[in-house]
Image (cartoon, rainbow, N blue to C red):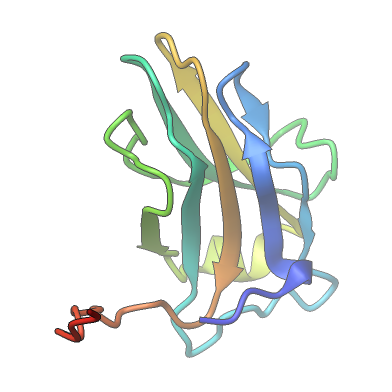
Length: 143
């Protein structure tokens, strides 16, 4: 998986203090033909574990206005909880319907806090391929 700085929504962004929009907004440009014929994924990596009993729910939004005054929700993802430990990665396939590909210029992720969350940082990016390799112990013994 390659993470491109131009497709990065959040870089270890604090998501526990309030409901927030991603620190970066993607400008899809005039053509807006991202992902035609290809699968795109939202990659979320937990940089600091969420603590307490609350949750953070990521939502992908698009809008023609960079201020997201009349945003359209593309997809609401499953909530991240305290079970989301440091280093845990989540991948979600982004629907490739016409609205995402043609109607809106800007894309962002909105993190909705639910309940009490005392800590939590995430890195979120739009990626083309995902990490799907399973790592196994090498069974080496060092003595």
